[in-house]
Length: 480
Image (cartoon, rainbow, N blue to C red; front, top):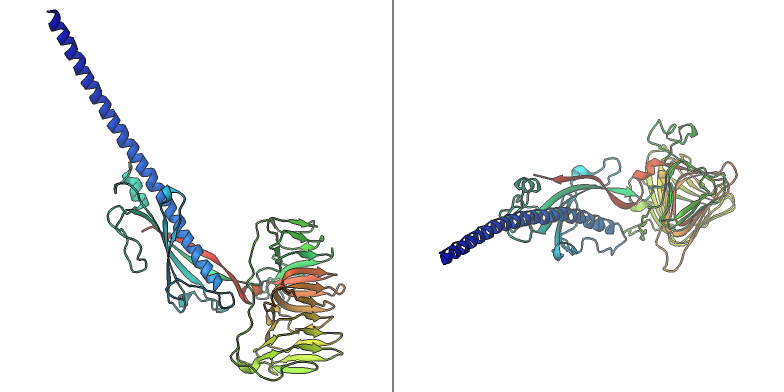
């Protein structure tokens, strides 16, 4: 009997042991299933988030190439891509992006850039670009959904069959991956996007300086296209890539921005003060004109150069070794007698000097671009733009000899209506009493305004001049 009881007890213990092992196994299996499913969900969610980073990186890569294309040749833009986008033609590139996360699983950014004709700004002919990107990240582990099927439906993961096939992208396959598609429209921006910009120090060293803005295109912001203090606007922004702006208590009707720097004398700044600004200015290359008007080759006295009704006409393109007028002499850029629109371009390889009562005079209806590679010294009332439209007189400092920093000095006894873009030059605007006014924009390597000088930025310049960058103006994700 005793043996039988022991046997029954042992059998009972064994049975309970088996039952407990079975229960624990079931619980363990369920826990493992739940943890595995949640782990799978988290990994897939992380890959899904990383794929949008890859897609947005593709937009950055496209903007980099577009920006490269603005530099003087050879700029190596679109190297490694299928072609250069233009006239509706798409450029295509594929990039593998190293990824520190997800056990080093690499991201793929596939980018398509095109230039549709319908994305040309009719007001200035600037081309907007359409950037389409596909960011993909492989999904590790078994090709199955995580713990939530709804989560997979939300993220639209490809586990066995590619969900969206077209002719735009070729890198997406049937292998398990997360994919995000993004389309962005990028717009060109002008080199004259600021009233005053300096790569280095920006110095406004007189407390009576006023910087504000107007818009010659808008009758509510100007009068007959001219500056009107009663219609003053607060977009006279000043900025530097450096870390110091000496505002000198100038009256700034706009924002003030530095690159992690400081601004002194800011008691009269109306707008926002920022420290997160940086904009690398695009250098100006030598004009590459196939043909020019051969005479004259130098201006050393009273001279008249004739503009043409056709923009870019060889007859109105002049390459001059220097410009030097003094003693009441005049360089006249003449247009049609009726004041209709005409165009002229000058490239001065040496210095431009206008002294005393001498002047460079812009005729009615003339739109002029003056490129220079030497020093510019225009004293007193040395530049006369009777129509007072700064967009009609654009001054561009060509990239100088390496290691040199030429000077641009503009007198301010009267009114100067011009836009100056010389990011490799030290630019100084000299005041001349209460009558010293500058209408336009000033960009230099260093920029100094001295004396009683008022600068009125024409916001119309933001849609004129050479291009300096591209910015995203539209962004959306294709979630089909």
